[in-house]
Amino acid sequence: MPAVSLQAVRKSYEMGGETIHALDGVDLDIERGSYTAVMGPSGSGKSTLMNVVGCLDTPTEGVVEIDGIDVTGLSDAERTRIRGEEIGFVFQTFNLMPQQTARENVELPMTFQGVGREKRRERATDLLEQVGLGNRLDHRPNELSGGQRQRVAIARALANDPAIILADEPTGNLDSETEREILELFEALNAAGNTLLVVTHERSVAEHAERVVHLFDGELERIEEITNRRVAGGEQ
Image 1 (tube, rainbow, N blue to C red):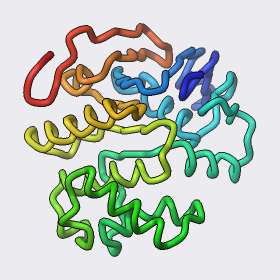
Image 2: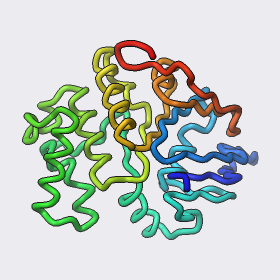
Image 3: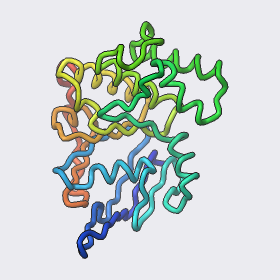
């Protein structure tokens, strides 16, 4: 069973008396443990695909399954629950709570899921150590570099052991060296069995994935298998 399955998914909007198909009949499976990138020009449907998979939006037609659960017809409350349990988000702008420490930011998704304080604290500490921030547990975002803030965001995305991690332009605000470090971390997460779906406009970032989904005008144009994947600091 795939981590995510899209079946004939359409998302349409009415704009100026015209129907715009942001997604136009997309069929796509994201297998467990896979590393997939999504590319396409502006307006191709990348953000809409991310929002539909992330249960932030619902399709006009078609079926979206997350971890075997058909989320298409769920209520807002039910979609919120699925987001909390099954999906980890990593954003270009980090989206950390500025007044909370790194550890408190990572604890936040577990708080919403009713995890006890001691267990939250222990897991947040473990995750921050995994991403190389064991010495920054009590630092607030303004005391961290951009790369460190993105590492906190990645640890937070892992907090509830999600079925899939969605990353939207995760290196867009980072310099080249920090980008390399974050891509190394993504490679390590994928090697550990995590499922990654990364939206990017950078070909060099996409080539770290196992395959690239190309969108154009809301349609799945093609799926490209990456036979010579880049690795951070070199190629394989």
